[in-house]
Image (tube, rainbow, N blue to C red; front, top):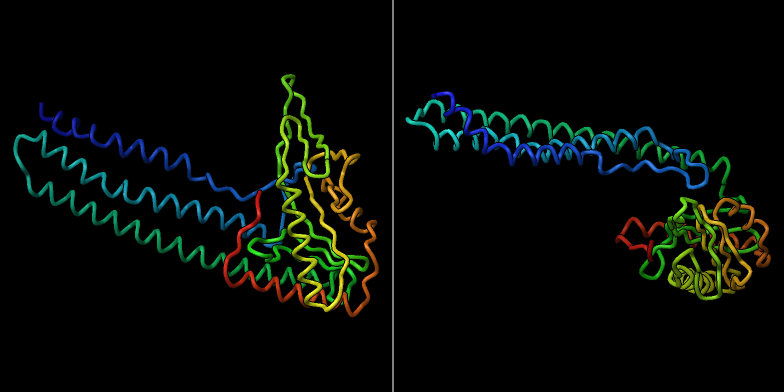
Length: 303
């Protein structure tokens, strides 16, 4: 039966087909959209629409880059199977398989070029939106305003999540994400007890978040004192979004909060008065320090 010579070589395409199915299933593995741990609503930042489009463009790039070799090799693999099962060799047929492979390779090359160009345009658009968004933030956070917040400040070999400069002190804010425990009955337990040297979560203990927050606080205290030429009141804050905090045994040198009332707690916490000259010097030093992120990449202390 001559038709078997064309049907049996399909067996060799099964591994390629299985790989293609896995690639398609994983195309949306990277999804940068996040939801608030407080109310589960999607969090939106400046340029969020472009961020979403950029995520989809990267998913398309992944799909084209991964499926390209698979689809391109399919005619060649099928042709090799035909050579095994065919009773006679038809070189015109083999040439057609080669031409089809070449054509598919060219098609996916053009698709990859298109994807790269799209990503470049979206990145440029996102950069412009972020730049405009930062300028608009000056409406609510001008440089002369007594409150100023820095994000991702390079420390001594790690990155401090946030630094808040207020008229009554500087706060080092570290954020840690932990999943609440679930009881056998399906009830969520999100109460964490704060002790001087550890956090007692439901079912496990951790010391590293407190230790890292103290480390960042000590470093910033010494660094700011050197930069401004005098002591500056600094306090470490550990934020655990979505958790209820039992602070009966909490240490005095750190502030542990659930995250929802962070702004109110920082406003209410008085470390000492910061005069205008020191306030401006701290902001200038931190702005220069934050610009170092554009040079060598720094790692965060932990997650």
